[in-house]
Length: 254
Image (cartoon, rainbow, N blue to C red; front, side, top):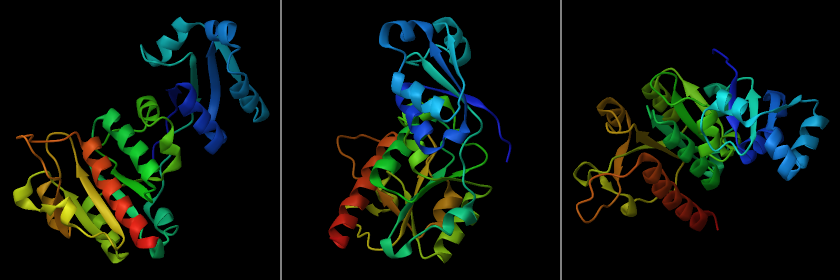
């Protein structure tokens, strides 16, 4: 896999990265304006110093040159490379007796949606998020910020072929459900019983889950809709499905 450095921004994402994987942080840049007015994030500075991560004071203009006009909070970090996990390595860590759930993203290309899904995945306690190498939003500064740093708390598994990976999940005893908002093509989410390891497939913006991927799935689940609403944002759909799964899992394991 190609490894490229990139910038992440915002206090929370950088703190999470420093806590979870400080070796992936090459350098911190803190705005001289923030350092003057707010003490320059003393805890963050101390944490970086303990791990011998260089800290550079820079102007706010220089930060915007690096990351653009975003809510950087006056601090950015240079990261060595995105954090992906190989499928076989991830699979070996699974505890199937805990009835885990995994998200499969069928070419979600918007970085804000990707980040929001990663945040929900971490909060719901899913075992991993599987993404394709191509036609998929990257792990970058926007993803880190949108996820509020949560992406370092859930494994991101990058694969060459989504449908081949679905076959592997089935061999591992996962039931695979494609999420489609069209109620005529699947059963309602609220009619489902989640008492086995689950893989939830969410499609990309506009196109949804591809026909081939639906064919490889065990069944299709729809989210009930009213008032002639035709669609939901994919990150919203993911949150609804995951927390229904989590509600049922909690009741089952209680």
